[in-house]
Length: 159
Ligand SMILES: [Zn+2]
Image (cartoon, rainbow, N blue to C red; front, side, top):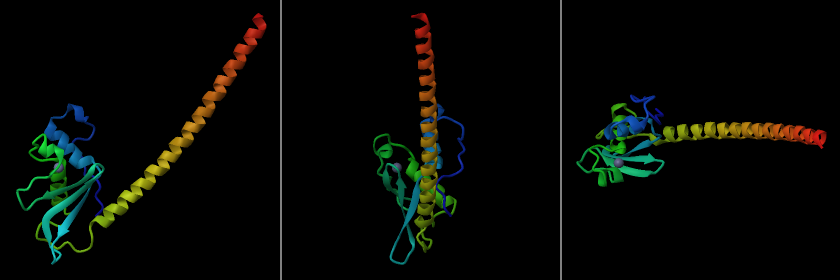
């Protein structure tokens, strides 16, 4: 169970063409986040979840009426922010234990490993892109050199 993103119901659609609530739904499905359940002393999910994102870690509580402390809720008064949506998605998809269920082995570890694997893949893509850029730069420089030589020859002829 290493779910870093969910299948998007908005794939191919730009955020700019979506209503605010659909934008939140799209982000909740597509962004890389890790949902970590908080357990009590008897290893039971309390209903509180830490939602780790690139911009910070947010606390979502499904069991109470406490809202997420993110700016979207506090400033925009979102009826459901991306973090609340993501926690709900993770519970619905059985990727994290529901409130009252046993937490057991740390469910964040497989997601952390999946993130590490994705970082390695991105790093190798970056390296390839760098190599391609160097090759392209070399080609452009050589083209410029050849053009300069031609210009020099033309100059010699006209002088
Ligand atoms: Zn939030």
